[in-house]
Amino acid sequence: MKINKFFVLTKYLMLGSDMRSGRKKNGLSDSSVYRIFLGIILFVILAFSIGSLNLPLYKSLRSVNMQSLLLVLNYSCMAFVIFFFGVFYVMNIFYFSKDIDYLLPLPIKPETIIASKFVVTLLYEYFIEGIILIPCTLIYGINSSANPLFYVYSVILMAFLPILPLCVALLLSIVIMPLVNLSKSKDLFKVLAGIIGIVFAFGFNIFANGMNGRNSSEFSNNIGNLSKKIGSIFPGGRIAADALINSSNFYGFLQLIIFVLINILSFVIILSLSKAFYLKGVVGLSESGSKRKTMNKEELSRVVSRKSVVMSYTIKELKLLVRTPAYFINCVMPDIIYPLIIIMPMFFSSSQKNGPSKDQLLSLFNGSSNYPIIMSIAAAFGVFIGAMNCVTCTSISREGDNFFIMKYIPVPYKQQITAKILSGIIIALGGHILFVITAVIVMKLPMYLAILCIILGVFGIAFSATIGILIDIMMPKLEWDNEQKAVKQNLNVLFAVIPALAMGAATIAIVVFSKFNLIATFTSLSLVYAVIDFGLYKVICEKGEDILTGFEN
Image 1 (cartoon, rainbow, N blue to C red):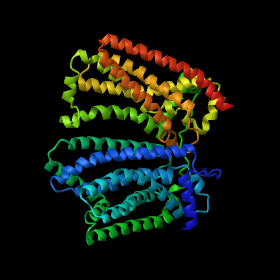
Image 2: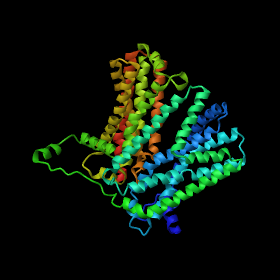
Image 3: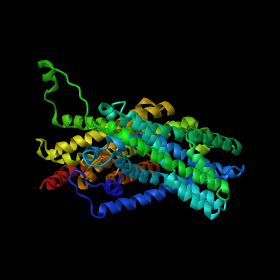
């Protein structure tokens, strides 16, 4: 592996250069600087949140003289999580990324490609690792008055911790890919990977809620058992924790050396294996399978029958959202997950410390006097879920290089905008109905109230949908080389969430303070939202057409 090719390739992959034309970005653009600034703010917020969870955990463990389990749990969990999600992440980066088609014809050895992509992947893992482990290190070190070597060891261990889990994940990919042809089902693989990840996070959230509210002895025993189980599955984290716990003696230094050597050796082994297996698994993955069906005259006439332009365009948008893995996971799945996240943990909550339980909510919303508040919550949830699914606030951005198609197809911009709004409303409405049905089952709401909640939810969803597409028309992100960047790295999603949260909070506050009855609440909310939604729609159709025409010129 030539060092100069390795550094050049790593630089290109990190800077996101256009490998098709050979262009590279000179320095950072204003948008890149803004994204870096936003990333730093996000890092601080998430790290602070993790720290707020680790601090009471440390105090609980210290009460039974088992505070070292904090390090064991965090490092063992971190190693396991990197490995678990690394299997899917590595498969996408090393095999399913679009830059593979441009790298393979170049005079670059497989181990060079592996090493460069591995380093880039490692840098992304450091972001997640820092969010988890930096608060843990500071909390343990400060409260236990750790020596300076503790912090030196922490930096070294955090630098090497992701290497072994990623190597094992990459090893599985390198061995499996030449044997199993996933090229015809790689989109399905990406979707399944995202669903498994979401289910894993959701299950862990329920487990964490179940762990709260217990006495110190039972709590510490559960933590100890959990760390042992995770450590037995992936022992690298346990070795790292032992090095930190014993940083003041020679045993800690020995564990540190062993940990570093294991990670270096794993990286050397994976580079050696890449020479023999990587090309066999990656060649031909850009091809995709398709089904061919012979149609008779009747079937053909039924398929190509004339339909409404807006409805046909809406169906096209919905198919794109469902068939594209990145869009399905980030735009469709949230509407399924958010209702479950809000409602389902109540079934696993046994005390007030864990939040409102099922019985408490039943008593809170028992009686028709609280029905106006329930309707306001339903409207606010519609606003919230309409913004969080990021369908309309990325609808123009998702066009990307195909934006020119919007210009030459014989469909007016107004109809295209309407279809994109409808697609966002339909996707969000499915999640809102799921939320209402779950609430009916849990809180025994009458059916007429559920219908009113769904109607108000539609008005709320329409508000977020129109706000979202207005933002995306004004500031579309059309330059991207991966679908993930169009939805996950698009600041328009954040800009759309802010007015949605404000509108939802204002809706609930007004209803609570106004103390209207059921009919008055439904009527007033419906009229207000209808006027706002219609006004926004008219503005979007007029201004949006002018803005899109300006892009054309």
